[in-house]
Amino acid sequence: MLRVRKAAAAVVLLAATGSTSAAAGHAEVYAAPRTTPGLSAETLDVRYQATRQDIAQALATAKGVQDDDRMRVLSSFLTEGRRFLSFDPRGDGRAAEVIGDLEHADRIAVVVPGADNTLTNYDDPKFVGGDTRALYRQAKTDAPGERIAAIAWLGYDSPSTLSTGVLSAGIAQEGARNLERLLTGVRRVNGHARFALLCHSYGSVVCAEAARPLASLPVDDIALYGSPGTTADSAAGLGASARVWAARSKGDWMRFVPNFRFAGLGFGADPASSGFGALRFDAGTGPHSAYLKPGSLALRNLALIALGRASEVTRA
Image (cartoon, rainbow, N blue to C red):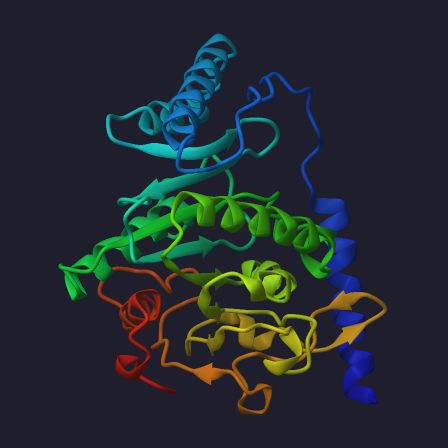
C-alpha cells in the first residue's frame, strides 16, 4: 500500500509540473488540409499529389510568417521522391509518410511514435521520420530481396512529456481510432500485405488501445518498446490477434516510472516484465530515445519483427 501511495504522489507531482510547464497556446496560422478521397489503390496517387500540394501551401505560409523551423522541414518534405498519405500543419502537426512500395509490399511496418514528436523534429534522428528511415534501411540490409514498406505515422497529437496528457490514455484513444483508419485504408491499397506495428513509449499506449479493433486486420506483430504500460494487465488482455513483443533497454529511464494505474492516471503493468506474457526481445543497453539507432541491437531485432522473422529475433 505504501508503494502505491508513493507512486500516486509521484504521478500527481508530474501532473502538477506538466500543467505549469506547458507552453502557452498561439493563434493558428496554418490552413486545414484539403478534403481528399478515401484511401484505396485507385486513389493512392491522388492522395500523394493532394498532400504534396498541402505541404507546398504550408511552406508558403511558413515563409510568410518567417517560421524558420517549419520552412526547413517542409522544404525537405517536398524533396523529389518523398510521399505522404496525409499531412496537417495545424498545431504541432501530423503526417504519415510512405517509404518503399506500398502497393506491392508483402510486409508493411508502421512506426508509432511516443511523446514530443512534432512536424518540426519529424526528420531528426530519434524522432518518427528519422527512426522509420533507419528501420527501413536495416530491413532492406537484412533482407534485400524482401518486398517491404514502412510508414512513419505521426497521426495523432503526440503529447508533450511536460504535460498532463502524457499521464493518461485519453490522447491514445483518439490516436488508436486514427491508426485503425490508416490500416483499414492501407488494406484497401494492398490486399495481401501483412502488418507489423512498432510502438515506442506513449505510442505503445496508442497501439494497445488499437489492438482489439485491429484484430480483424492482418496484423502479425505488435512490438511495444520503452513502454510506460498499456492499461492492460497482460498481453492477452490487449485482445490482439497478433504476436505481442515487448522490450526495455537497460539505459531507458522509463524503468524508474512506477507501473500502476490509479484514478485514470498511469498505465499499469510493465509489458517488458515476465509476468505480462509478451514475447520479450533484447533491446540492448541504449537510452530511451535510441531504440532505432543505426547499428543498435534493438534496431536489428525490431527490423526482424517488421520482416516477420520471429525465429531470428534475439530474446531477452
